[in-house]
Structure formats: C-alpha cells, structure tokens
Image 1 (spheres, one colour):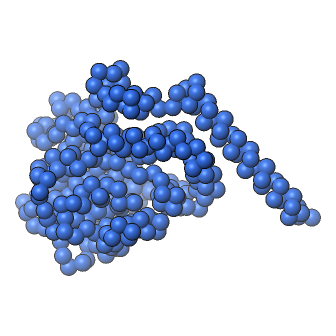
Image 2: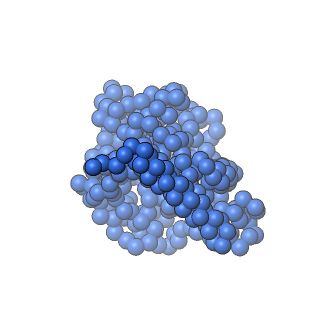
Length: 323
C-alpha cells in the first residue's frame, strides 16, 4: 500500500529540515574553525600589496617567459590585480554570506542537477557570474584605447552577459550565442542580439571581434569552431579573444552529466607555459590562426555558502588570421 499523502508530506518536510540543518552545520564549521576563503578575506581587508597573501595572488598572474616557446616569449603580456577584479571579489564575498539565499540555491541545485545543466541552474537562480578580465585588461590585450570603436562584437557562449558587458562599450552592435534557455533570457534582458549556435557563421556579415571565453574545452568539435571563427572575422583587422583553462581538461556537459568530447584536443606539456606554447603551435596554427598576444588571468566564478569564489587558471589569447 502506498504511503498516505500526509505521511509523504511529513517525510518530505523532515528531509528538508534535515537538509537545511546539515547545511547550517557545514556553514558554521567552514566559517568558524576553518575560516572560509582566507585569501578572499585578506583581499577584502587589505587588497594586497604587503599582506602575506600577496605571493599567492601573484601566482594568479605568474608566467615564466623562459618556459615559453621562442615565438611566444615576446607576445606575453603581464597582467595583475586591478580595481575591477577587486570589486568582483567583494561582490562574491557579500553574496556568499546571504545565508538563506545560499541554502535555497543549494537545495535547488541538489534537486535539479540530475536533469539540468549547471549553466541552466545558475541562470535560473541568477547566480554564478563569471569574471575573466576587466575593461583595462581587455583594452590592453587588444592594444586599443578607451575611445576605440568598431561595428560588431560576437560573444560565443555568453552566459548571463557579464563579461559581454565588459567589452560591449566599444561596439555598435553586440551579438551573442548561448544554449541555456535561462541564460538566453538574461541576454535578451540586456538587449543583445541572440544568434543560434548554427546561425552566427551564416549571417552574411563578419565580426570585428569574436570572443570565445572558456568554451573550447566544452565542445564536441573545437577545431570546427576555430575554423568558423577565422572565416567569420573582418579581413585583416578582425580579432578573436579566446580564453582557455590551463591545464586543458575537455569535457562536455549533457544534462547533469559530464562526458568526453567527440574530438579530443591533446594538449602537450605539464606547465602553464608549455601548454600555452603547444596550443599556439599545434592547434591554432593548424586552423590558420596566429597568436598576437597572450596573458595569464584568474578565471573567477561567484561562490556559494562554502566558498566566496572559485578560481581556475586561464590563458587568454588574442588571435588573428594568418596572412
């Protein structure tokens, strides 16, 4: 005999109470004895310089040019902590402290992660914003000034449009692609022109800048994407700004599962510098692209009730079509 409806309600209610109690216990442990995200705390109290965490922050941007290939050495652009990065960390720390909001997010993610992608869950909840580079870092990489203007930007896999905003002031028209329906809604609210993932290559016009940020390792056919971007650039002056997590570990998200891509790029090298050099010589060059500039930046994501933010190491390239 199936359980009585009142019994099912009681069981569900007890489960929710237990779940919330468990999260509160974990939160207390993390913020008490273990001190949640000490590096973020140090950043927020005294944004670097002479603090003990300064050496750790430098690791976010560190490159040993001697380990880069000869062709890559003069192309490296040294980056560092700036005001926009600090502001993102402040916002992330503040949001992670919203106790009941974070508990709701955690419960929602637990229930729906088997059937929804992480991107869609974040889009639905309005959380998980990313930070790849600041406006100053973007301009420095492209070698442009604050007043520089061009016609068209295309942001592939734009998410909620947070990073698109950083670039958008320089362009008269902004296009974006995204597969997640909740994220598409965020992009439409910002009045970006949405294109289908099989449409942007066949619009009849070309783009002054195409951004492809942390997407290359999340696709079944990354080489095909690189070729399509090359062909879609404005001749001679068009540029691609591409960010890739290093070490390069490709996986494709399907629903709530992660699977290996159908085409697997085997990037050689153990260090950040070796993999960056290999990406240039063995991947980009084979599809007719060459590196104009490269830097190392932290790929930051808003955190949750356990951590103020999450961080991965990015290599950010400016690419142009080979002549």
